[in-house]
Image (cartoon, rainbow, N blue to C red; front, top):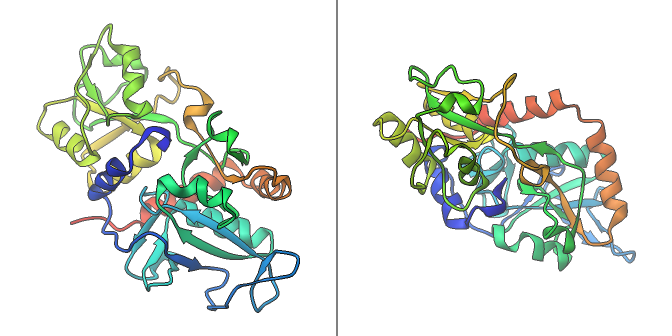
Length: 298
Protein backbone atom coordinates (compact mmCIF):
# COMPACT_ATOMS: atom_id res chain seq x y z
CA UNK A 1 0.00 0.00 0.00
CA UNK A 2 3.01 2.28 0.27
CA UNK A 3 3.30 2.46 -3.52
CA UNK A 4 2.85 6.23 -3.46
CA UNK A 5 3.96 7.16 0.02
CA UNK A 6 7.07 9.29 0.27
CA UNK A 7 9.78 8.60 2.82
CA UNK A 8 9.04 11.89 4.58
CA UNK A 9 5.36 11.01 4.94
CA UNK A 10 6.12 7.60 6.32
CA UNK A 11 8.49 9.02 8.90
CA UNK A 12 5.94 11.59 9.96
CA UNK A 13 3.16 9.01 10.11
CA UNK A 14 5.07 7.02 12.67
CA UNK A 15 4.81 9.86 15.17
CA UNK A 16 1.32 8.77 16.14
CA UNK A 17 2.22 5.21 16.93
CA UNK A 18 5.93 4.64 17.42
CA UNK A 19 8.88 5.46 19.59
CA UNK A 20 11.43 4.26 17.09
CA UNK A 21 15.18 4.55 17.00
CA UNK A 22 18.14 3.55 14.86
CA UNK A 23 19.38 4.21 11.34
CA UNK A 24 19.47 2.58 7.95
CA UNK A 25 21.84 -0.19 7.11
CA UNK A 26 21.37 -2.16 10.33
CA UNK A 27 21.53 -5.92 9.99
CA UNK A 28 19.48 -8.21 12.18
CA UNK A 29 20.05 -11.89 12.67
CA UNK A 30 17.01 -13.83 13.76
CA UNK A 31 17.03 -17.64 13.39
CA UNK A 32 19.96 -16.92 14.63
CA UNK A 33 19.57 -15.04 17.65
CA UNK A 34 22.71 -17.06 18.33
CA UNK A 35 24.91 -14.39 16.76
CA UNK A 36 26.37 -16.81 14.24
CA UNK A 37 28.60 -15.28 11.62
CA UNK A 38 27.44 -15.73 8.05
CA UNK A 39 29.81 -16.82 5.30
CA UNK A 40 29.55 -17.41 1.57
CA UNK A 41 30.12 -20.92 0.23
CA UNK A 42 31.80 -21.79 -3.05
CA UNK A 43 28.36 -22.30 -4.52
CA UNK A 44 27.50 -18.71 -3.63
CA UNK A 45 24.96 -19.48 -0.91
CA UNK A 46 25.25 -17.61 2.36
CA UNK A 47 25.44 -19.92 5.37
CA UNK A 48 26.00 -19.67 9.12
CA UNK A 49 28.12 -21.82 11.41
CA UNK A 50 25.07 -24.02 11.89
CA UNK A 51 25.40 -25.06 8.27
CA UNK A 52 22.03 -23.58 7.37
CA UNK A 53 21.61 -21.25 4.45
CA UNK A 54 20.63 -17.70 5.29
CA UNK A 55 17.54 -15.92 4.03
CA UNK A 56 18.63 -12.29 3.67
CA UNK A 57 15.62 -10.00 3.92
CA UNK A 58 15.48 -6.21 3.56
CA UNK A 59 13.00 -4.06 5.50
CA UNK A 60 12.71 -0.31 5.84
CA UNK A 61 11.45 -0.30 9.45
CA UNK A 62 9.35 2.83 8.98
CA UNK A 63 5.82 1.55 8.45
CA UNK A 64 4.07 0.31 11.57
CA UNK A 65 2.47 -2.13 12.05
CA UNK A 66 4.38 -3.77 9.19
CA UNK A 67 7.85 -2.94 10.51
CA UNK A 68 9.46 -0.67 13.06
CA UNK A 69 12.52 -0.23 15.27
CA UNK A 70 12.33 -0.44 19.05
CA UNK A 71 14.70 -0.28 21.99
CA UNK A 72 14.52 -3.83 23.35
CA UNK A 73 13.71 -7.42 22.42
CA UNK A 74 10.18 -7.37 23.83
CA UNK A 75 7.44 -9.19 21.93
CA UNK A 76 9.89 -11.21 19.87
CA UNK A 77 11.78 -8.31 18.30
CA UNK A 78 14.97 -9.12 16.41
CA UNK A 79 18.23 -7.48 17.46
CA UNK A 80 20.13 -5.38 14.94
CA UNK A 81 23.88 -5.01 14.69
CA UNK A 82 23.95 -1.67 16.55
CA UNK A 83 21.90 -2.91 19.49
CA UNK A 84 18.45 -1.73 18.39
CA UNK A 85 15.62 -4.12 17.61
CA UNK A 86 13.19 -4.65 14.73
CA UNK A 87 9.65 -5.95 14.95
CA UNK A 88 6.31 -5.94 13.14
CA UNK A 89 4.14 -7.98 10.81
CA UNK A 90 6.91 -8.19 8.22
CA UNK A 91 9.29 -9.59 10.84
CA UNK A 92 6.72 -12.21 11.83
CA UNK A 93 6.26 -13.22 8.19
CA UNK A 94 10.02 -13.36 7.62
CA UNK A 95 10.49 -15.57 10.68
CA UNK A 96 7.71 -17.85 9.50
CA UNK A 97 9.14 -18.23 6.00
CA UNK A 98 12.69 -18.83 7.24
CA UNK A 99 11.48 -21.45 9.71
CA UNK A 100 9.47 -23.30 7.07
CA UNK A 101 12.44 -23.24 4.68
CA UNK A 102 14.79 -24.39 7.48
CA UNK A 103 16.96 -21.31 6.97
CA UNK A 104 18.49 -18.80 9.33
CA UNK A 105 17.12 -15.29 8.96
CA UNK A 106 19.14 -12.12 8.47
CA UNK A 107 17.24 -8.84 8.32
CA UNK A 108 18.87 -5.71 6.93
CA UNK A 109 17.32 -2.30 7.40
CA UNK A 110 17.42 -0.36 4.14
CA UNK A 111 15.74 2.92 3.28
CA UNK A 112 12.51 2.45 1.31
CA UNK A 113 13.91 3.96 -1.89
CA UNK A 114 16.84 1.52 -1.82
CA UNK A 115 14.94 -1.74 -1.31
CA UNK A 116 14.66 -2.80 -4.95
CA UNK A 117 18.26 -1.78 -5.67
CA UNK A 118 19.45 -3.91 -2.76
CA UNK A 119 17.69 -6.91 -4.31
CA UNK A 120 19.03 -6.21 -7.78
CA UNK A 121 22.58 -5.86 -6.47
CA UNK A 122 22.39 -9.14 -4.55
CA UNK A 123 22.87 -7.48 -1.16
CA UNK A 124 19.70 -9.24 -0.01
CA UNK A 125 17.59 -12.08 -1.36
CA UNK A 126 14.25 -10.35 -1.03
CA UNK A 127 12.35 -7.59 0.75
CA UNK A 128 9.36 -7.93 3.05
CA UNK A 129 8.31 -4.34 3.47
CA UNK A 130 4.64 -3.73 2.70
CA UNK A 131 5.40 -3.32 -1.02
CA UNK A 132 2.53 -3.31 -3.50
CA UNK A 133 2.78 -5.61 -6.50
CA UNK A 134 2.80 -3.16 -9.41
CA UNK A 135 3.46 -3.72 -13.09
CA UNK A 136 6.20 -1.09 -12.98
CA UNK A 137 8.08 -2.81 -10.14
CA UNK A 138 7.61 -6.19 -11.79
CA UNK A 139 9.90 -5.04 -14.58
CA UNK A 140 12.76 -4.88 -12.05
CA UNK A 141 11.98 -7.71 -9.61
CA UNK A 142 9.92 -10.89 -9.44
CA UNK A 143 7.16 -10.85 -6.85
CA UNK A 144 5.81 -13.65 -4.74
CA UNK A 145 2.09 -14.22 -4.39
CA UNK A 146 0.47 -11.64 -2.07
CA UNK A 147 1.36 -12.06 1.59
CA UNK A 148 -1.18 -9.46 2.69
CA UNK A 149 -4.09 -7.54 1.21
CA UNK A 150 -4.24 -4.05 2.67
CA UNK A 151 -7.87 -3.13 1.99
CA UNK A 152 -8.95 0.50 2.23
CA UNK A 153 -11.14 1.58 5.13
CA UNK A 154 -12.44 4.80 6.65
CA UNK A 155 -11.80 6.04 10.18
CA UNK A 156 -14.47 8.18 11.86
CA UNK A 157 -15.52 9.31 15.33
CA UNK A 158 -17.14 6.40 17.16
CA UNK A 159 -19.95 8.68 18.36
CA UNK A 160 -20.22 10.67 15.14
CA UNK A 161 -22.89 10.76 12.42
CA UNK A 162 -21.05 8.29 10.18
CA UNK A 163 -20.23 5.63 12.76
CA UNK A 164 -22.82 3.26 11.31
CA UNK A 165 -21.78 3.63 7.68
CA UNK A 166 -21.73 0.40 5.66
CA UNK A 167 -21.47 1.71 2.10
CA UNK A 168 -19.45 4.57 0.70
CA UNK A 169 -22.74 6.23 -0.23
CA UNK A 170 -23.51 6.46 3.49
CA UNK A 171 -20.93 9.26 3.63
CA UNK A 172 -23.28 11.66 1.86
CA UNK A 173 -22.58 15.15 3.20
CA UNK A 174 -19.35 14.09 4.91
CA UNK A 175 -15.98 15.79 4.70
CA UNK A 176 -13.17 13.27 4.27
CA UNK A 177 -9.46 13.40 3.57
CA UNK A 178 -6.27 11.34 3.65
CA UNK A 179 -2.56 11.78 3.08
CA UNK A 180 -1.25 13.20 -0.19
CA UNK A 181 0.20 10.96 -2.92
CA UNK A 182 -1.59 7.84 -1.68
CA UNK A 183 -4.27 5.66 -3.20
CA UNK A 184 -6.19 6.36 0.02
CA UNK A 185 -6.57 10.00 -1.03
CA UNK A 186 -7.18 9.19 -4.69
CA UNK A 187 -10.20 6.96 -3.97
CA UNK A 188 -12.04 9.93 -2.46
CA UNK A 189 -12.60 11.13 -6.03
CA UNK A 190 -15.20 8.36 -6.22
CA UNK A 191 -17.52 10.09 -3.75
CA UNK A 192 -17.19 13.78 -4.65
CA UNK A 193 -20.72 13.83 -6.13
CA UNK A 194 -22.19 13.62 -2.62
CA UNK A 195 -19.29 14.21 -0.19
CA UNK A 196 -16.40 16.67 0.17
CA UNK A 197 -12.81 15.64 -0.51
CA UNK A 198 -10.92 17.97 1.79
CA UNK A 199 -7.32 19.09 1.35
CA UNK A 200 -4.81 16.33 2.03
CA UNK A 201 -3.01 16.28 5.38
CA UNK A 202 0.58 15.31 6.07
CA UNK A 203 0.33 12.69 8.79
CA UNK A 204 -1.97 10.29 10.56
CA UNK A 205 -1.57 12.45 13.66
CA UNK A 206 -2.89 15.52 11.86
CA UNK A 207 -5.87 13.57 10.49
CA UNK A 208 -6.76 12.22 13.93
CA UNK A 209 -6.51 15.72 15.37
CA UNK A 210 -8.78 17.05 12.61
CA UNK A 211 -11.45 14.44 13.44
CA UNK A 212 -11.22 15.26 17.14
CA UNK A 213 -11.57 18.98 16.36
CA UNK A 214 -14.57 18.39 14.10
CA UNK A 215 -12.78 19.81 11.05
CA UNK A 216 -13.37 16.58 9.10
CA UNK A 217 -15.74 13.66 9.56
CA UNK A 218 -13.14 11.02 8.81
CA UNK A 219 -10.23 9.86 6.70
CA UNK A 220 -9.22 6.88 4.59
CA UNK A 221 -6.23 4.57 4.97
CA UNK A 222 -5.49 0.85 4.93
CA UNK A 223 -6.77 -1.53 7.58
CA UNK A 224 -3.41 -2.14 9.33
CA UNK A 225 -2.79 1.60 9.67
CA UNK A 226 -6.32 2.08 10.99
CA UNK A 227 -5.85 -0.63 13.60
CA UNK A 228 -2.62 1.02 14.70
CA UNK A 229 -4.34 4.38 15.06
CA UNK A 230 -7.12 2.94 17.22
CA UNK A 231 -4.60 1.53 19.70
CA UNK A 232 -4.06 5.04 21.05
CA UNK A 233 -7.39 6.51 19.87
CA UNK A 234 -10.18 4.21 21.08
CA UNK A 235 -12.73 6.98 20.54
CA UNK A 236 -12.44 6.41 16.78
CA UNK A 237 -14.05 3.65 14.73
CA UNK A 238 -13.05 1.73 11.60
CA UNK A 239 -15.59 1.50 8.77
CA UNK A 240 -14.47 -1.58 6.84
CA UNK A 241 -17.45 -1.72 4.44
CA UNK A 242 -17.81 -5.43 5.19
CA UNK A 243 -21.19 -6.53 3.90
CA UNK A 244 -21.54 -3.29 1.97
CA UNK A 245 -19.96 -1.46 -0.94
CA UNK A 246 -16.55 0.08 -0.43
CA UNK A 247 -14.15 1.97 -2.66
CA UNK A 248 -13.27 0.51 -6.03
CA UNK A 249 -9.58 -0.42 -6.13
CA UNK A 250 -7.44 -2.82 -8.11
CA UNK A 251 -5.41 -5.68 -6.69
CA UNK A 252 -2.31 -3.73 -7.70
CA UNK A 253 -3.29 -1.08 -5.17
CA UNK A 254 -3.96 -3.41 -2.24
CA UNK A 255 -1.97 -6.65 -2.71
CA UNK A 256 1.43 -6.68 -1.00
CA UNK A 257 4.12 -9.06 -2.26
CA UNK A 258 7.69 -10.11 -1.56
CA UNK A 259 10.07 -8.90 -4.31
CA UNK A 260 13.00 -11.16 -5.23
CA UNK A 261 15.81 -10.78 -7.73
CA UNK A 262 14.62 -11.00 -11.33
CA UNK A 263 14.90 -14.58 -12.53
CA UNK A 264 15.23 -16.13 -9.08
CA UNK A 265 12.25 -18.40 -9.65
CA UNK A 266 13.58 -20.97 -7.18
CA UNK A 267 13.26 -18.59 -4.24
CA UNK A 268 9.93 -17.19 -5.45
CA UNK A 269 8.53 -20.72 -5.77
CA UNK A 270 9.74 -21.65 -2.28
CA UNK A 271 8.21 -18.53 -0.75
CA UNK A 272 4.95 -19.12 -2.60
CA UNK A 273 4.81 -22.67 -1.30
CA UNK A 274 5.17 -21.39 2.26
CA UNK A 275 2.59 -18.64 1.76
CA UNK A 276 0.12 -21.16 0.35
CA UNK A 277 0.11 -22.82 3.76
CA UNK A 278 -0.53 -19.57 5.60
CA UNK A 279 -4.32 -19.12 5.88
CA UNK A 280 -6.06 -15.76 5.87
CA UNK A 281 -6.96 -16.35 9.51
CA UNK A 282 -3.27 -16.89 10.33
CA UNK A 283 -2.29 -13.72 8.49
CA UNK A 284 -4.95 -11.69 10.28
CA UNK A 285 -3.81 -13.13 13.63
CA UNK A 286 -0.21 -12.16 12.87
CA UNK A 287 -1.29 -8.63 11.97
CA UNK A 288 -3.31 -8.37 15.18
CA UNK A 289 -0.23 -9.53 17.09
CA UNK A 290 1.89 -6.87 15.39
CA UNK A 291 -0.64 -4.13 16.13
CA UNK A 292 -0.81 -5.17 19.79
CA UNK A 293 2.98 -5.31 20.08
CA UNK A 294 3.98 -1.99 18.56
CA UNK A 295 5.29 0.74 20.85
CA UNK A 296 2.88 3.65 21.19
CA UNK A 297 3.66 7.26 21.95
CA UNK A 298 2.38 8.76 25.18
